[in-house]
Image 1 (spheres, rainbow, N blue to C red):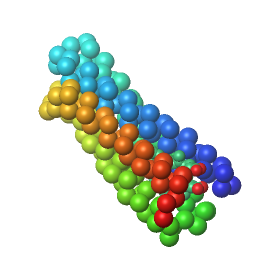
Image 2: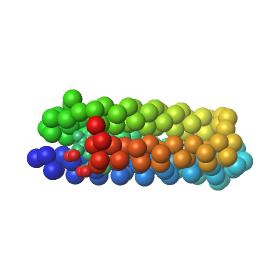
Image 3: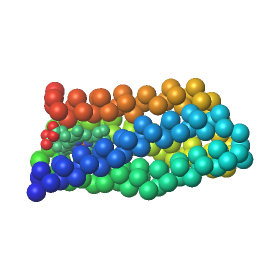
Length: 140
Ligand code: HEM
């Protein structure tokens, strides 16, 4: 049971992280596309589908299987899990910001430059490094 839960957790994590890496890349190119152009309209469809069909369900199943794994493993009092949860809450906030930017683009009301999206693209990478080090090394 425990190994199955962890496997489902890791599958969900991979789908969620793939989306958090790819969506800001779409924003980078979308930010330079002319509003109303075919290119811009195609980005809108790609962004909406990626967010709604993959990222949000994957985030929810990451949380469900992560918390379930923690319960089965008796990890709720472990310091590494508390630190990991803090980083995952920040990652979930980043997801929320991405959802807001998808809505802004859909209304042709983007307020950020391609350079901005290129920079924030590094945020999920840094969080991923911290999260994986915490769960594998369990330093405290
Ligand atoms: C949503 C809240 C989350 C909770 C409650 C949670 C909890 C857990 C727990 C309890 C384990 C099992 C640890 C073990 O068996 O030693 C685990 C494994 C793992 N988690 Fe999470 N996790 C969450 C989110 C994430 C996220 C966002 C990532 C990556 C970005 C992630 C990456 C991993 C990895 C790679 C493993 C496998 C580690 C191993 O088997 O050594 N988790 N998680």
